Length: 261
Length: 340
Image 1 (cartoon, chains in turn blue, orange):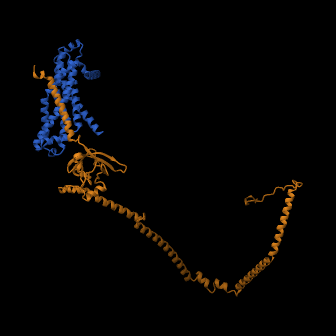
Image 2 (image 1 turned 180 degrees about the horizontal axis):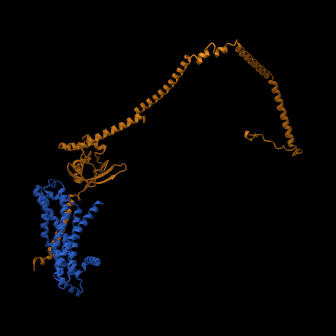
Image 3 (image 1 turned 90 degrees about the vertical axis):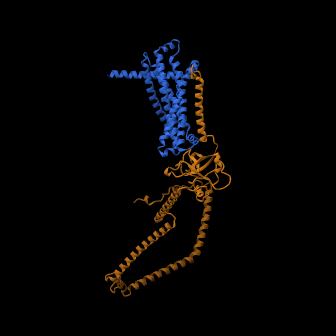
């Protein structure tokens, strides 16, 4: 029993080290992406199209609805709709928290799973051997554009998500309080700090990196059978969500420490 | 080929461009609403405490934000130097006699400084001018003498809340005055300080001490009188004993003139002695011319002897011919050197 426990720990440590090395290699290759511009740019554009543009509708709808729901639910508290408190809550909830996190969940569900599945199937169909046979590293060739594409898409989608969330809240708030939308926007922008935008975009960037690396890693974890593909895809989704939430907590902690100091 | 794949570059470019424009718009709108690009005019003020103050705090005029607090600094006099900036569009409201007020923090109020513009007409205050706060005497006087444009309070609660700090300050001042008075009275009762009460108390204390001393003397006097009375009253007392016909005085005086005779003889002897002294002095005064002549003669002889000695001394034949005197025994200088 003690022996099997030791072997299990050793296996876990070994796989953790491999995952760490894989992530570092992927990030290092991403820094040299400009060397593979000819092929890479096309893959990158397609990745942004798939991850960013195609997800824009659902992200916008989700954010619009969330912003409106916050105001409708908050209207049950009379003090909520009075003063600058409303605008600060909206900015903190939508811009700092829900915007990046909801976008991350959408991207995980749509693009993260797709990347794992696609790469897994490529491994099963021996495409990796074909890349290797012509001297191209498959991780660098397939992983880097996806990492860049997902990260950029996450950042851009978060911007849209924030704008849509604030638009939805302002629209509903104008209907409930009979205050002009222009005045709502003016008050909203007056209560918005540069740090709110910076934190939101930072989270989006970090979540994008996490989703891309996790998805690519699990795609390449497929060995031989097609049945491994969904298993790795599910793992990729679950771990991406967990890692994003942990990263969110760490960023909040760092921000709070930065404000306190 | 599908439209989106054919125009993927353009779609992605538009998607990216719009997102970037949105970010730029958010930053610009936030900046405009936060007046990042508005010109500001700085002013100075003074507060006794930084409690309730913070950098970035709005400065309001009748509920409208017209500026913000820029800096707070504790100066050498332990007061708080405050710098605040007013947006340029509101600069013309900052008239002379303007006052800064830190509203009371009761019931969630506060969080902003209120500016009451001065009623004095003329040019607005120039940049870096001093605007007193109501925490200074100057500011209080401006408000008290109604030289500032202060809005009338709309409701009783607001009126009470507005007046409360002033009232509390008056109560505080009265209590402080009472405390000082009590301290002065306590010091006066102890006789410390130069206040009239202290001086009176010192005089009273001195008079009391003198009275105590007088009472002690009176007590001693009355005791002596009592003793004397007792002596007088007692048949064996000193005075009756002395005055008794059989007492010491009577005995001394009734000696058939023996005492008188003795005294008279002593006096006669003294008179004789005095006459002897008188005659001695008379004879001495008669001899004094002769004593004078003798002394003159002696001085002449000594002068001649001095000349002879000098001649002998200068004679080369007699030099070294006279033996030296032997050692002279020194007399006893101190009683302790004598043998007992």
